[in-house]
Each structure stands twice: as structure tokens, then as C-alpha cells.
Length: 259
Image 1 (tube, rainbow, N blue to C red):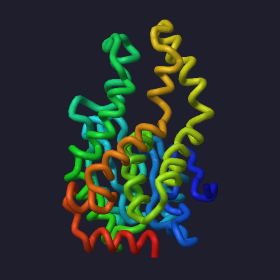
Image 2 (cartoon, rainbow, N blue to C red):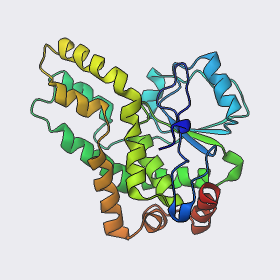
Image 3 (cartoon, one colour):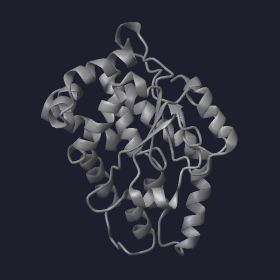
Image 4 (tube, one colour):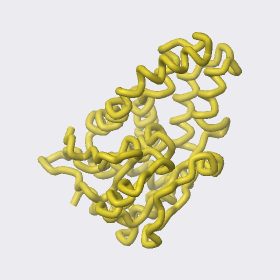
């Protein structure tokens, strides 16, 4: 994995280039086209300058309206940057809401692992209109380079990034390895977070359950991609038939990413 794809910010988490993955026949996904991150609510003036240097033209915010109220972006002073809201959420509430309820004993005995698996399937098969909107926007070269983000930049953003990389032709193993890079980014914070939450919950929440909340796990993404190709044979067929994305839009985006 190309470490140069990670870009250092003061207060923007998990920022990296979606491109840079190896493709068949010795090719590489183009870099500098699409980026992913956590939210921009704590961004500094220096972070805004870093974004300007990347020539970002569009920011796609996948957060819900409630999430945007509590974590307002600070970075959008440049009116040349287009901000687009494409909210993606679970039918039973966000993963963050369920996580807080679990930790504070409101969901005693709740199977959070099952919820996350259902959450990914919801993203794939119940949020197809949002995926259509997002991919259609990204297929327009006037909107590129673009940044895609949610809150932590791990589940919603991770799933969307995986679809994009798959369309470009990246093998699933490489896609999942890149998805797991989120754990690498957050690793220095995870142990401290686990300790704090265990104290706050009077040790009700186990270290293992807390880690389920803050880490990404290969099986969630792998199972969802497997279900997609089981139903539609390829990611492209899924995007075209389930999400209704225009074939020319898909091919245009693929050309932008893979040459």
C-alpha cells in the first residue's frame, strides 16, 4: 500500500487518496482525483490551505442533518468549492446512535456485530438512490478533484470508497486492505478510548465491544461485496441495475480513475 496516499492534517481525521491501488496488467489507479476523510468540523486554517493545494472542487458530505448540526464544518470559506449533502443512514438510526445506546446500557444484550452487518447491507441495498446521486456527481469532471466524508470516514465513506475502487478495477483483496487502513490511522487513539469508555460505563462495556465500535473489520465489507456480486455478478452491474446509474457515467468515472 502506498503510504504517500495519506495526507497529514492538523485536525482532519483519516484523510487519504482513494486512488493509488494496483490494478491488473501492471496499472495503477490514478491519484489526486478522489479523496476520503472524517468530518471537517475541527479543521484549522492550515487544513483549509492543505485542501486548497489539493484543488478540491467538490465536497460530498454523507452525514445526516442531525450529525451536521452537532459537528458543523468549519473549512468552507472558498466559494469555488461545491458542497453537496448526500445523507446516508440506517433505517433504525445511525451506527453512532446505536453505539452510544449500547455503551450506556440502553441495549442490554444487543448484538452490535449483527447491527453492523445489517448496516452495511442497508448501505448497499436500501441507499441505492444516494449511491446513484454520488456516482453521477463524481462522473462529472467539473466536480473533480472531490472529497467524500462522513463522521469518522470509516463505514459509510469506507463502503463508498470500496465501490469506487472496485469500479476502477482494483482486486477485492486490495480494496479490503485499503479499507483496513482506517484502523492504522486510529490505532494510537483506540487503546486510550477503550480505557476511557470502560471507566465511563463502570466497566459495563467490554474492551472487545468498544473495539467493535471504533475499528473497521474486513468481514463486514467482504460479506457485503460478496452479497452484491452474488445478486448482480459484478459491481458494475449492481451500480447500473440496483442503483440505476447511467452506463456512460460509470464508464466516464472509470476512465477518470483508471485511464
